Amino acid sequence: MKKLLTVVQASELLGINRFTLYKLIYARKIPYIRKEGLGLRLDPDQLETWTRQGEVEANGYAKN
Image (tube, rainbow, N blue to C red; front, top):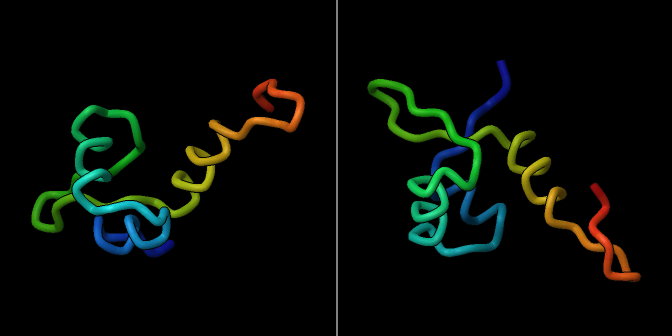
């Protein structure tokens, strides 16, 4: 089983404030896992996919 990240760890990985990450989570704009007894966790592979969805090539068109 791969290691899931806490909100603090994920915010550091993404380079954003943890409160910004909480806003994204509660707006359901970023993938997360809610486990009873563990709280919120984020999968690093899903975070990488999520960040790549917003990539824009030099010509201005999205890569998707």
